[in-house]
Every structure is written in structure tokens, then in C-alpha cells.
Length: 199
Image (cartoon, rainbow, N blue to C red; front, side, top):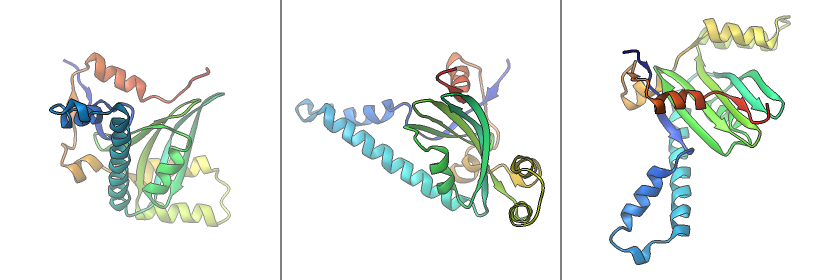
């Protein structure tokens, strides 16, 4: 049977069922104390704390500059883009600007950020520059270099960066992990694609 790469979720706020279930379990013995409004306040507090923890881990994990690149869904279509950042936190806030929903996940060592806003969704991959990559980028940025930013980024992505393997190195996941192509798994793959809600 064919298998597909397993998505290892590091953080997500698209589906809050797990948080909701945890809150309800705390009050299953005492229904009078249960409050829908209090539950959602608690859920959003927990989501915020979990995101803060994940960003702290990711910021500490990367030692060199990183490049984030991928597809950006806007009101007028889907566009390719990329940028070099000094740390993951700066990259995260740039990638997720104006987005209410975010998923950070690992697929066989590749680190992705998928996020959605009112016009569409975006999907980025994040790689860490090697020492040579940082030198290459500095030379391009601060010298008279006729190559376009896209040309520079293409070289960084292909030759001067590395796959982070975050889930393996930090959480002890297998280096490579696959799963059966169930309907849910295939739907997740489709949902991870950047799209414009207007095209």
C-alpha cells in the first residue's frame, strides 16, 4: 500500500476540540460550575501559552539566519515569496501577519508554517542557513551584485541551507515517518496548500 509523509503538528489553532474537551473534563463532575464563556476564555489563554512555548523553542533552536519561502494567497491570486530573517520569531510574525489561524508542522524534517487570513491562506517552508549561506547572503546584500533577490534566494534554498529536523531533534520523533493515505490525511495535505479565497 502507498504511504504519504506524516504531518507532525507542532502547534495549531485551526481545531480547538482538544482544548475544549480538556476544559469539559475538568468540570464533568460539577456541571453547575461549567460556563461556556469561561471555557472559551480558558481555551484562548491555553492556545496563547502553547504558542508562546513553541515560539520560545523554535527561536532557541535556530542558531543561524533562516529563510522562509513559499506561496502567499491574496485577494488577487497566489504568489511566490521569500525572505531571510535573523530569527524564527521575526519570521513567524512576518509570515502570519493578519492571520487568525496558524499551523506549524514538520514533515520528515521539513518545517512548514500554514496560516489563513480574510483573503486566503499562505504556506511557507523554513530552512536554516549554513555558515556559508550567511556569508553568501551578506555578500549579495552588501556588495554590488547584479543578481535578483529571487536568484539569491534560490541559491540559499538549494545550496546554502539545511532542513531543520525540528520534530526529531526536539521532540524525539522519527527522522522519517509515513502514514496510510486516509481521507483525513489527504484532506490535510490539500488544506496545507496556499490559496486565494477570491480566485
